[in-house]
Length: 286
Image (tube, rainbow, N blue to C red; front, side, top):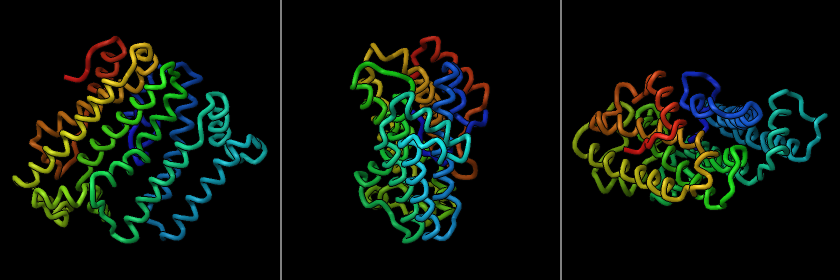
C-alpha cells in the first residue's frame, strides 16, 4: 500500500510505478486518478504557502470531493477530476479515507505553523494512518478483495511504509522544520532533534533508529499475518510496494542507520526486479 502522498507521482523514478505495472488498464487508470488527487492536495500542504492559504486549499479539495461523489460531471473542470469521479463510482470507493487523508495533511500544516512535535507514538500512529493507510484502503477497493480482513492488512502495510518514509527522510524533513519521531522516543534515547537538519549521527541516534525500525518491521509482520490467502493474488500490487519498501528499510539498516548526506534509494533495475519476483510469487520478506 502506497505511503505518504508527498511522493505520489506517475514518474518511473518513483516506487509506485512498479507496483502498478501489472494492473489491468481500467484499474491502473483508476489508481492513477487517486494518486493525482493525493499529489495535488499534498502539494497544497507542502509548498510552504501561508498557513491560511493552505487551509483554504484543503477546504477547496473537500469541495472537489463533493463534486466527485455527487457525480455532477458538468462541475468537474478537468480530466483529472473526471477520472477520479469515474474511479470513485466504478469501484464504489468510500469517502472516509479521502477525508482522513486531508486531515493528515492538515496535521502537517499545524506542524509548520506551530513547530508541533508528536509527543507519543500513538499520536504519530494517527498521522501514519491518515496519510498512508487511507491510501491503502482506497487502493484495495480498486484492486478488489473478498475478505474484510484485507482492510486491516492495508492499514498495517500503510503504517509500515510510512514509518520507512519517516526514517529515510529525517534530514530533509528537519530542514523544512518537520520532526515526526515522537518526543517520548527522542527523550528515551537522548537524541536532540535540533541536530537532524545537519546530521547528528552517533550511538544515541543509531539506538533510536533501530528502535523505530523495529516498529516498521512489526507493521510489515502484521500486514503479512493479516493478508487472507484468498486475496493474495489481487493484492500483488500492494505486495510489490511492500517488497520495495522492505528492501529500502533493509538498506537503511545496512547503512547502520546513517540517513544523513543522501537518503537511501533503490535503483530502477532493483525495483523492477523486485516487482517481477513478487508478481511471480517469490517471498519478499527475508
